[in-house]
Image 1 (cartoon, rainbow, N blue to C red):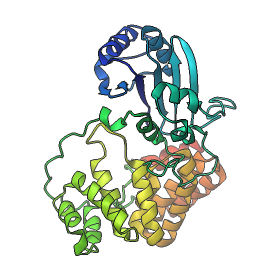
Image 2: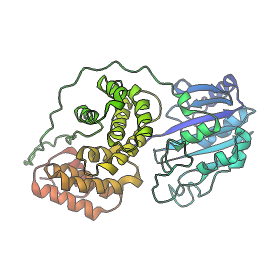
Image 3: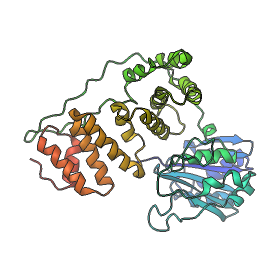
Image 4: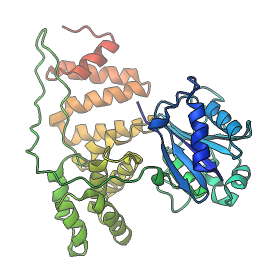
Length: 387
């Protein structure tokens, strides 16, 4: 399951009145709001709240809040990590709505329509031209373009919502203040890779072995640290001392100055992964995906980076690229062909190519060297008889 997230913006709203209104909404069981799980912040333009994970009826909540307050209410959301959108209400009337990915559930749901930049700009006191590019439904094809040059998220990335919020004057990160950087951990013992099991009759399947990759293998990251020159001394020191949060802005600055240094992109992706889950801020998986993609432009056959990029941003639109990465890994690293073909079989299944998925499964079973829970599950889904 992907990311489900909701935030409400109250331009011109007093935080205490907005909190009281949300408290009243929490008494309605249909809205599933738990106020003790929400995070508030006061901005110069008004107040905002990051809602708890259980809120399910976005538009109804925006409607009810707008009836309790004398300011507009914009309910923003990310749905399953696949797209973002909002509902804008004032005095019990819907003023605007937008979803970045149309026809997600069925034709016309969400509707294929642009957001009303003029209406939004009136309530948030911004120029329409500063937000209108966010409010265009995404194209069918993937792109690495940004709506505006200073954005962090590209078009097609659900975290574009945070760039939109910032353009409105409500910085998402202010709702998620960073936690103190964790103390360095002692060096862990090397992970011993499990060897695939031979298939025996009635043998219990094992968990699928996880291969080391560029996001998880510190030893591999340090190998690329050695590729950096003396101009990157601060970066080197931060990485060697495991100060990953401090290393990220240093790496970003270094990338701007030395954009043709592949190690910088890989190391920033590694740092993002070490910080993933430690703070309450946005997930950086899309950033990892972009950094790995940039690194692979320089080092297209790097096995560790290809392994890392495949599961990093697992949205429907990226499964075809996963299939290409796994196909290349089969060529570069045939020793682990069973694991790559199993992963590829799942992707084929997810994109609707069950014939290709079945061929991968048959190849794995013919070799008879892998017997894992994931293999058994997919084989049963295809009706294979298991002996």
